[in-house]
Length: 155
Image (cartoon, rainbow, N blue to C red; front, side, top):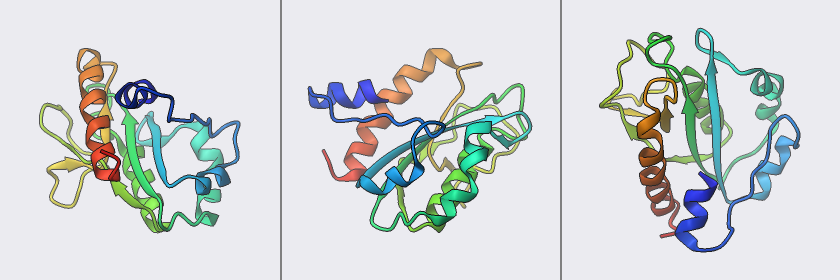
């Protein structure tokens, strides 16, 4: 993500923070956030996210635009594909964020997902499946980065 956006601008404009190392309060220092989250096992949060999950309830994201991407396995876990992405979307919305970056659900093979929009036609963020669609990831990331920059109002 960082490289695709930096290439678009020709300079380094993206900072990376690791939620297991940095205070999540730092999220409030930015006007635009790109958050990534994997879905673990049967629709669960990954350990680093689980440890700070309740702390997210204390952060005011009002006025901050957030784009989300998720990592998941649509073949191995078709009933829980990208569920953590959906959980994170609900969390940032509850904290006042404006979200951007929906992605069509076409081309994916899954049974259920908590990361779909109300009309079920889109994911609430970019769904990546490096287990089964690795060859598509770079293209998806490139397209999505251009999309979110536009939706952020930066392009």
